[in-house]
Length: 336
Image 1 (cartoon, rainbow, N blue to C red):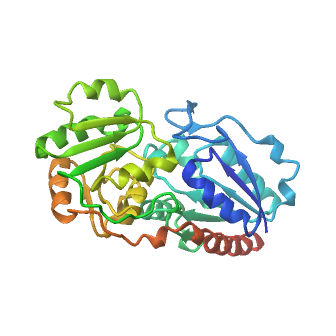
Image 2 (image 1 turned 45 degrees about the horizontal axis):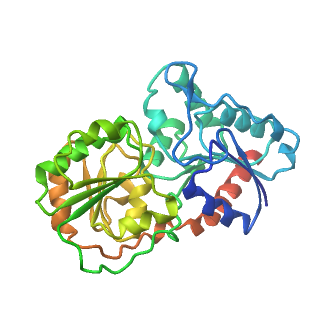
Image 3 (image 1 turned 180 degrees about the horizontal axis):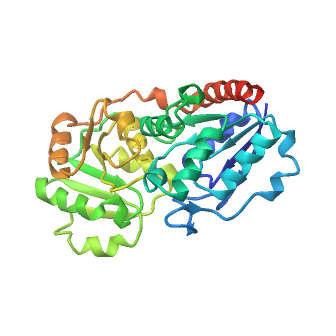
């Protein structure tokens, strides 16, 4: 099958997924933002909070009609909408991936909300990658038959579970991500100091503008800022910890939670992260709304040491089954 895949940017956790698709199909990749992104792309604003990349991939027009199937990475971009409506015009089977409800939650009414709902109604099929995105899609398009429900695709290769060496003193929490206000770094550090025992520690992996300010409220050496760490080396620090904290106020999804679970850690995850509904029933996962301190105490009680956790439902090899199902449904939609 000849596939055109349009995305804003290729994040590290998506590279193995795309390569696996290439093992079975001909795949052309078009990016609307940076070719590769370690942690997000810069957005501009057009109307209100409507996020978009003004870049429209005109170079795809020459070979668009030679493709059998088109996949676009969302609705919140002029480039995405442009490709979707071209696919409708040329009657090419196509699917929209819907991973995050973050942008969608910002638009309950008005012009952007109307555009979003129109796209959801017109696109041939929608692949949802989380329970929250599935529920939102039902609301936006109202057609259950055009939705292909999937888990987000995760490659565990760089995040192996290693047996606990038993050498740790105290309980170690870890945070992975950018250090920005949205991520809840300050409330995490304050909650840690509120409940931590003298021998406990917190690793903070990442960089950002919050680092300098939050360092000032660190009372001693128990909070360790490790700076940026290459994606391939994250498992080293995860395997020296017992629980990941994901304290975000508002987040697209939360792949660090899957990385931590793959390494056998407990996870404390905010209910403002897109992933929380997908992992809340897994062993060693504690979700919270506002009371982070209590969640940190609870995870220490239920997850004393790292233990293997089965997250095979998220394995990236399931992407082919999902795409094949979406393609067949899209063909029927286009033909009708």
